[in-house]
Image 1: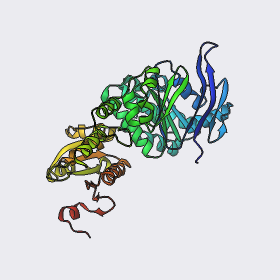
Image 2: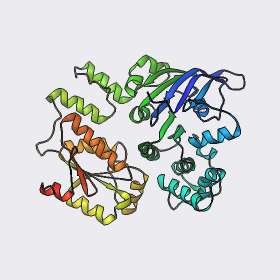
Image 3: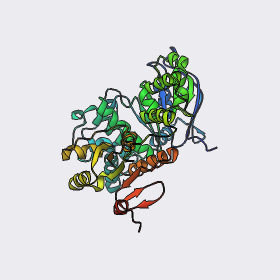
Length: 408
């Protein structure tokens, strides 16, 4: 078994001699995990997160990073905070410089970086969070979502292995929340381990690989989202509510729909269960499957996108990530979907409608992987065209070959 990146072992803590904030907490963080600590206010989520990079020190127990107990000397803490980055719930607590560029550069400067290397680190971090062109802006004039991105960029500039975010969508409107969660998905796809705290059960259920329920400083449940949220008594004990998808699935079972081996995570999963129960397989219109075309926004232009929409008879447009949303807004194109884009486009493809997804970087391949996984699990052949290639479950063609049926 691979050694965990972070590990808490029998950790307890009290603030100022008052009520215990954490009580004998133990858990492991695997490499490249997506973990959500979920609980009501006062459950101990933030306290536990602050211990994972040494900002708080346990009264009893210990925190380990790659198997080694954290040390609390200045040099040791400086290194652990470089490797385990922390983004506060209130971005204003983290943003201290008069311009965005200076704020993002603060960490690398303290690590000794200068000149070209420093400029490269800051530029790359701003690119990752979609804030190119914001370098000279005063942070206090930015929106809440933009401030959050500046705080994340300041951490990314130090190239952390683990990214911790305390209530990442707190105070943000729905669009800003979607943008931040899209960004975290991109960063995870790049190989980072991500841990968040939240009391938003819908967010935790749809996003995390592992959900940890906390109540009064203790972990009361830990496992897959389906496992963690399926025990109604534990969810009530944590002063939370059951996610809507779980409620719906439970009600479908009561009404005679057959059970699925895994708890559904999305609307697409629910549709699969219903259609398989009715028809013994996924229902498709007589027109067959639609096509999903995916473009890297960094290599696309307005004319190409508009031409593709016309040629492919695209009925649905999805934007994944801030860069795609910004470009479409500049081009005067309003996307139909900006959240859960892949699953929604799969649903459209099942009904014979073609979709276009604009995203960036490795997320292009993530779309292809997700559709290929769906095809394999459901014996379907939804086509994905990625740039000048398409994916049909392991066989690649150029777009022209897809249209003509000829392989080169």
